[in-house]
Length: 228
Image 1 (tube, rainbow, N blue to C red):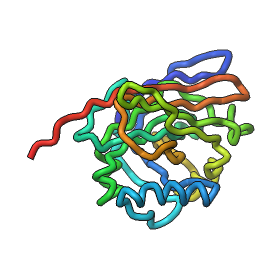
Image 2: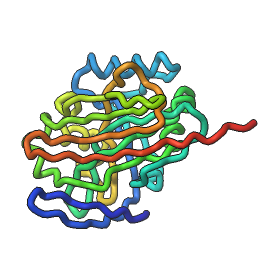
Image 3: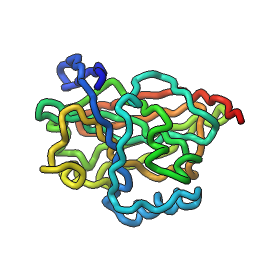
Image 4: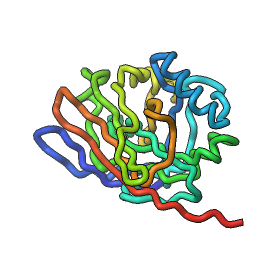
């Protein structure tokens, strides 16, 4: 267990909140649209990554992999980011954030669960209350940008109506349909525009077009050499 400090944005007020995080769950293949979901599965299959045993599927990773830093270090040049909404349970409440399931694709080709443990998972420092956005959840937008060889490009974009509803996602992954206190769950992603590829910098955001606000974060990717 370790602490992360966030700012809860309630529109008219902002409040600091320190949460004790003791588990991280990464939900995969959470698409509501089976065609879009299968496109992402096929995208990964082209890289040698096997189809999941079930859809959705819930991977566990060390909570210590969560970070709010603006740079991460990865071994080799085979990793890439994925924008995802993040749900965090705390004292019966659920907060909504935004993060990147940064993943080593080479490792993913032989073990998805292992790959989830290889890279830090950047998360923005702003949270919203789920109850403030659940009424227009499907209209919210996930978006990411990748800087590749000096060029910043739109990498992913889509609205949350493409993902399983929050209640359904939680019910399938947790006994009693309740997100545990101290649990941070990544909620799935969209196919990359132009295909999955590494970047020198990755930026991600969750936009609320109804309440006119956005959660943003970005980070540089430092590539460590592979020896041996």
